[in-house]
Length: 211
Length: 211
DNA sequence: CCCTACTTGTGAAAACCGTCACAATCTAGA
DNA sequence: TCTAGATTGTGACGGTTTTCACAAGTAGGG
Ligand SMILES: NC(=O)c1ccc[n+]([C@@H]2O[C@H](COP(=O)([O-])OP(=O)(O)OC[C@H]3O[C@@H](n4cnc5c(N)ncnc54)[C@H](O)[C@@H]3O)[C@@H](O)[C@H]2O)c1
Ligand SMILES: NC(=O)c1ccc[n+]([C@@H]2O[C@H](COP(=O)([O-])OP(=O)(O)OC[C@H]3O[C@@H](n4cnc5c(N)ncnc54)[C@H](O)[C@@H]3O)[C@@H](O)[C@H]2O)c1
Image (cartoon, rainbow over all chains, first blue to last red):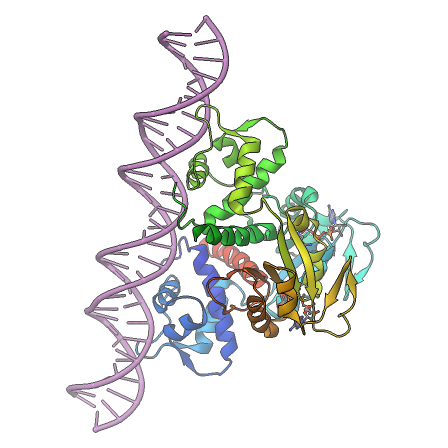
């Protein structure tokens, strides 16, 4: 059980295992690595290896206690507590995310919305006002925002990411199609849909050429 | 130069190189693997290795011809021609994507929109009508749809994916948080934002525990 | 034409990640 | 208590991806 250098692919699979376990809901049951693997797109050995990075919480001959493993995975992924999130950019992407119930139900709580469009500032989304970006750093620091969802145009993204770091955020979910330049102490996850589409075109083009 | 088994990470980087090259715009110039690496988050050796999978199109001592490499990358990624896309699910995600100009400007052309909500069917988005899903398979086959963007609730996603395959699509960009079960001849790319957020929580939690 | 400075393309080495196989461990039941 | 049946945890192995290092090639200047 070493806690160094967990592969990104392992983290993705852990999310997936957690999702499967939440689907069970039956308290008190157990689940084997084989069953867990069948629901993900992976193998029993992979499941065990993934979990072994963090300790050993199965029982040989039996499997894993569903509710226990679920709680451990929540701890490992850090979703055993709520996270305070700010939404930066109240545009189309921002709206879709804001209204997406899965975030809140998993503990990601939007505590502030920001936009620089005077038309939008002052509007309400749900029970949250849209803030101007004038006092951005102070506001997110006061609200103890930990995560930022960055949904502004590419031209503003670097600047707002810098200010978010200035305001104390620890992680950024970035929708702008640029590479953010920020200190390594802050984690960034990029969502780049054009890249995803290009991965599709590539795969299809390859398979056509292959035959 | 082998065209077998290109790593997914290489494909992502190719997209990124193409984006960087498009940023140059200066015709006739050259660029070195070192410069390309600096704009991506990678190394010069990685750039050269990535490109070497597909041939050798640099000049030693000089670097790569910008416009030439750009065209080659477009060919490799399959974006040297338009792609016909259907949007399935005219909800919040669907709307954000439909209005996102970057898709069309890169050759992904939305040719049909589908929804099963009677309120929405018959509405127009831009100059496209929202179709019912009754004649879904026939319609996408007639329109020669190649890619589907699947933005329906998780409960409908498997069914609509199956029907899309039935209608002849070759690739699916899936926003629903489930694992689609479809034949391997059809490529799927999943976009799972909860997983992205959990990757953030994990990284932050780890770094806090580490010190 | 030759020398210098530079950069590619690519085998080889290293690092990383997934798979395999099995000893260790557990439960149940006789 | 002992045996049979099941499943974990993990070291060893193998494949894949990245990094390294350098021979080969190019342009330009003298
Ligand atoms: N729409 C999509 O489907 C989609 C898909 C992938 C990526 N993206 C990316 O996501 C980002 C947002 O896209 P969108 O479609 O929501 O755009 P949008 O124009 O609908 O929304 C952007 C919002 O950000 C606000 N804004 C601009 N500068 C700002 C600043 N400095 N501070 C605060 N707010 C600011 C604007 O007023 C606007 O409300 C873009 O970078 C885009 O490239 C969008
Ligand atoms: N909103 C987000 O930010 C977000 C983020 C990540 C993932 N997702 C996922 O994307 C999907 C869509 O989310 P959304 O927020 O746009 O939901 P939404 O409810 O706004 O839109 C879904 C649309 O699909 C339509 N629909 C339902 N069943 C259908 C069917 N069988 N055929 C055709 N259309 C059908 C509905 O009428 C609705 O218009 C969901 O699976 C959701 O989990 C959403």
